[in-house]
Image (tube, rainbow, N blue to C red; front, side, top):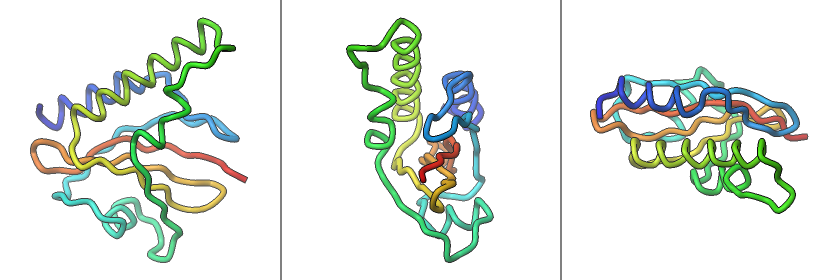
Length: 132
């Protein structure tokens, strides 16, 4: 797949999805012309954050685990949202290699789900999480 095809698929799959924490934020697709591999330092530089910012990493599965889990109490709307998140995760995993989730900051956290495209660039999704 080309970079354009990947970013188009990510945009379509993340459309109307909100990342829920203590606030709700949409996902934004990005493509960095930087070549892989991705490092915490590269993420900080590419996103314009200060070099000393707190950064935490996790896997895609761990990051999305609650969003992709159906609960007994879920109604049709919640089940549909879980299904959309599962589809998004499937597209992320099938489109990008060497995936990593970077969470920058504390309380108001900038989240970057970053992977390598077949063309060797870095791409993924960003959102925000609020955790007090």
